[in-house]
Amino acid sequence: MDRLRLYRGQRRSRSGRQLAREIGIRLVRTRNSRFTARATDLILNWGSTERPAALADARWLNKPEAVALAVDKLRAFERMEREDVATVQFTGDRDKAAEWSERGSAVVVRRQLRGTGGAGIILRRPGESIPDAPLYTRYFRAQDEYRLHVYRGRVFDIQHKRRRLEADASNEIRNSANGWVYTREGVTCIAAAHAEAIAAVASLGLDFGAVDLKVSGRGTVGILEVNTAPGLEGTTLNKYAECLGAGIHEG
Image 1 (cartoon, rainbow, N blue to C red):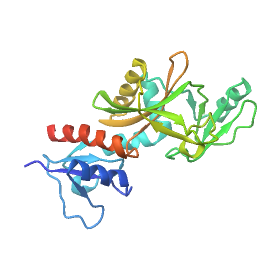
Image 2 (cartoon, rainbow, N blue to C red; image 1 turned 30 degrees about the vertical axis):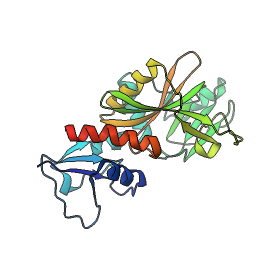
Image 3 (cartoon, rainbow, N blue to C red; image 1 turned 180 degrees about the vertical axis):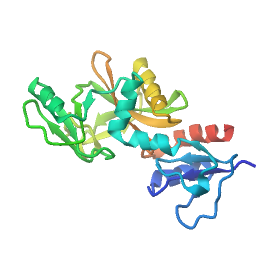
Image 4 (tube, rainbow, N blue to C red; image 1 turned 120 degrees about the vertical axis):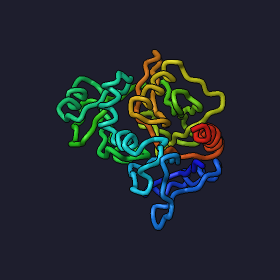
């Protein structure tokens, strides 16, 4: 009989634990686990880049190698660019980033390739000095920012990033620390965003992912990143459990 498990690696993700409970499958412990996978077993990988020897023979939903590619933002951008996915403009070259700045563009400096929640991000306004960093993106002036949740070629949930009413929020770096939250009530998104989100997940070799993207007033799409272990709560948790749960039971 096939066995289904959720693996979080060293992440200790609360969302991963909640998802396993909601679907009704067990977690694979990272220490002192007696579980050894068979070739027919299926591992739901929640954001781990590790492939333990005990799980080597299993089938994977989000292979660790694909997750490792997705979490390295520079490598992920390079892969998506090769696959003609509409990302924001990026470079690892400080001189090129400085040229953007000199030509009147703001530059997002990313000091951490694997940072989450806005960690390691610095905004440099046009004409300001550009510090050394492994990755820079040209500021994408957008009307809206979304998170599209994708599973095997379809978008199953959409969230829109909006400013908290009580927050004195920055409009440039839209993260929770700056007063922005995801909402879903009455949210729609243009077809081009759906297509690019699906293409982004496929280009990285993932089965599922939460795609953060911007849409300009003219309908131009710019992919920011693909998350392999997004935070889950409420409706988002229920939708993941319904979608991934159905998928893993189908094999």
